[in-house]
Amino acid sequence: MAYNTSYDIEKNQGYAVQTTSDHDGPYSGSEKKRTSSLVGEDGAVPGEAFEIGTGLRAKLMRFARRYGVEARGIERVPEDERTDCGFKALLNVATMWCSANMVVSSFALALLAKSLFSLGVADACLVILFFNILGLMPVCIFSTFGPVFGLRQMVLSRFWFGWYGVKLVAVFNVLACIGWSSVNSIAAAELLHAVNNDVPGYAGILIVAFCTLFITMFGYKIVHAYEFYSWIPATFVFLVILGVFAHSGAYRDIQWGYGTSEMGGIFSFGATIFGFAIGWASYAADYTVYQPSSQSKAKVFGWTFLGLIVPLLFTQLLGVAVMSATSINGGDNRYQRGYEEAGNGGLLGAVLIPATGNFGRFCLVLLSLTTIANNCPNIYSVSLTVQVFGRWIQAVPRFLWTLVATGAYIGIAVPGYKYFETVLENFMNFIGYWLSIYSTIALLEHFVFKRGFKGYAPELYDEPSKLPVGCAAVFAFCCGVVGMVAGMSQTWWVGWIALHAGEAPFGGDVGWEMAAVLAAAGYLLTRPFELKYFGR
Image (cartoon, helix red, strand yellow):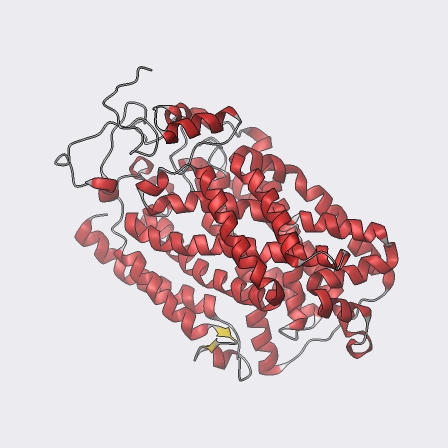
């Protein structure tokens, strides 16, 4: 294809875009409307478009693609470049989420049932089953959007929140991705510290961070290739833990509680489990965009659900069982001592090392490295999320944003290492709060107002004047925040509704439920008016 020198490459996201006069449309500056001979009528951008030009960005793109680095950011994927096809594509989805959740941070989450919420074994297991299923539904639904539109999750969000409203969502998503990565790195560092007390916490965090960075810089295909296999050693280690613990006879059947205290514990632990499960919703479509539009939505939904529910139930139910051993002899046992000394790493060390010695230490090291699989989706997706803030940010290559994100979560994880349990519980609740609002608004718009996939014009994803205004979504988001404040139960704040959901002084955490209800009410009330007066 001949290159027209009237195209301004460096100022228009790095691909050939024909500039227009400032008077040609409603956009100027960074939000100018664009036309192009390379960009298709459906708004899709071919891969070769990123390499055109003589500026620094084009040179970086050519250099990166020479070594197999994904140059594409949030631009729509053309149909002829969606090469993730057939049964292998479905396996890619399932193993992607299986690897990302067959990790120690999922196991560590289950330990909170006893340590923070004073639940028994059976009630904790029921909470894990029920709230995981609830939290996974939005993730599975949003995964089906990727093949249909070839757009990333945050770009899809423009059809629900508008060009400017989605920037608010992106802020929360960046915080979530960085926070997830910090929590996961701390969990891995605890394991390494349990193996060798001379290994400082920051060393384990750095190991996980740099390994994750190497994988995510290469992009979609390498992330999927790594995740395709990384669940195997993780599953092996968890099976060893299961076998050794079962053989030890240390399991204790901690009985259910009762009354308002039990109710509060169930709501609060449920909020934590829900936050972990729904945590993938804000970037679910990122990992199916290279599948063809002909891919079965039912199959994508089903394989996504399978890839998520199996590792979550396995690791968390195992965590509840292992944590029960800390109640032996009134808490005077090696399991409780290990947990007090080194958190989840110390607990797992108490299970494996006395029985298997150096092999157990090897298993713990291996398990700590599987945390990389959990961090890869976070860092890959945060490098895409930041690009919706503006075209000038989109002009920075995706792979450079992985460097920035890595530095950010290292800076959070190192000082937060000593406060893992508190950080984990508070962060999981934060995730559940905002994502329940996000998912509620998105699903209402999709099913109620757009009436399914036929209600979209995906080629308009990059045209602000033709996207929803976003006023209704932002208003509904604010309503959801009010519900969140009313229903949340944290050590630093207990909402007035949360006080009635359990025993004082902390009640029970119903923040995500209240957030979803008020967000739904706010959106259903205001979206019809927005459509009436703006027509979009």
